[in-house]
Length: 159
Image 1: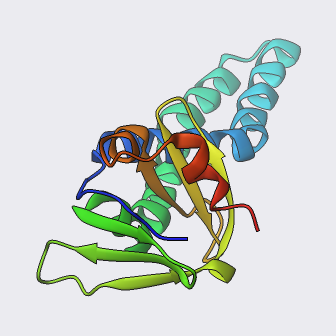
Image 2: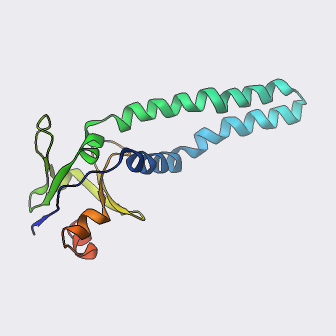
Image 3: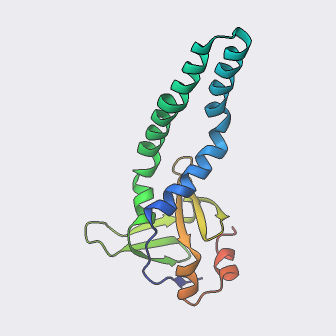
């Protein structure tokens, strides 16, 4: 197996959108429960102060949690792998990343570091075993412009 993609890059907004979807799907109960509890207390106790607390949770606490998630996931080296311009090669050893930026060193993601693949509307997300919510984003356009059928490319990740 040997596939090489033309050099491509992922827009930061696209990467962050996928990261936010994954994060919210996994964490939504923890983000919504304090709002519901404060809202219920405001109605049950007929006290507007609990409504103010709910608004503080919504506009202060939740953005702080999201900023910590951003620092933890979106500023990681693995996120940089997705965002910088690179050419990607699938080999028998793993996924070889060759960056056009001279400050970045080429990197091999071994197959045992890949936990799976998710397909979104416009890209493949190669899930990495580094930490939760860590993925390499490969847009369909980069695969199609390289002349590789999408189904054939996706079958490389079945192990």
